[in-house]
Length: 498
Image (cartoon, rainbow, N blue to C red; front, side, top):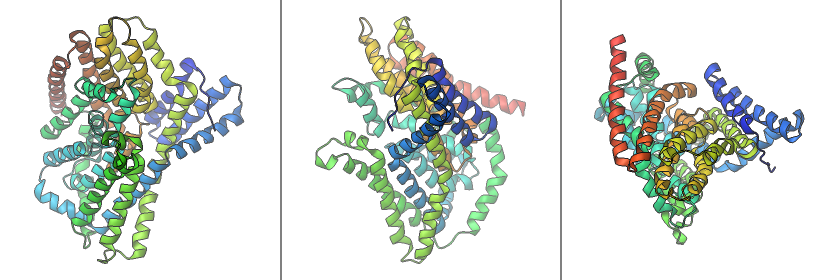
């Protein structure tokens, strides 16, 4: 079914705000997202001359469309989670955890190792979230790092890393949105101005090294010790004949074949540049990688009798079954995003303030950052946000005297888009991060939100400075110093209260 967008005005922001508010109040994501989708369809039907029946029909039409549009993502997640289940049941995860326990003997070491692994897997944020969670969860559980903390580290080294990595699906997406023959060069120029990504990575490593947590995350860390000690003991008792290679080899094959798969699908072996190839259809390439990991597990486990053929298939089915709940959240969030972008014009309404405003150019980067953050948080999509804002920013900066503000403002656009994507409860990256860490989704959002918002507020100040200094280095230095100082103060305040 083809959907026709209407201008719903301020009504267009009701569905995402309703879904997000209900999710925080009820702590229940499924019904909150569904109500958000239905409310959007009711608004659309009311403004376009429809009725209750057409609103109900369009609700499921939107779900069908989003499932079809994201079919490769669904297949990839099913295959990947089958690999995760197989690795776990083979005893490979537990064996790896025992070995890593001899190397990583402190929470700080495990947190830093998780952060480094998140940075190394920069090709795609969803792939990053699930892979890092699968590899590091046994170690962080053993060392009593909370699942909330693991989910934060995963999430903070997913989109924020991908948006400043020259070789990633994100780089190609951004470059393609810039109406310029040298869009990739413009993307590279925005990297120093992406304060949110840079400061988020700085915060992850500083907190990992210092252990200075605050807010809900601090409570989660304290609560984790006793419960996860019991889980780690149970996992140790359940260990079988698995070896480290039973975890490492399927994951390594999966990663390598995923990169090769993205290159193959995008035409790299037919002459297309690598950066363009991996951005053409990344989920199709990731699916090939996940299938290769599954075949590797079969050849590794069955001949050594770690599993019978029946047990192997049962574990595949079990892995796919375990991904159904987060998959349902993804489908509902995709549907809500479709309602906002394709039917009600939420992004058009919000971004309209930018093109119609007459503000001093020095305030343009901070204004765009705030608007991008609101849009991305409401829609749960950074790609959808910068896809709508980049053309507007480009047009604004083509006016007389505004050309010099193009790169700083594009950097602010990407930064605001990533902030909203990073902490929105309806973002697919947020959902996959909580899935990879096996952390309750709302708990991940609640504990991560203060961290992400602290960085975003300081970034706002940074973009205000950037707008008048026209250099990223002064802003970055000031923001980094302020960020570390605030973290130290907040963590000490908690200790004093204690």
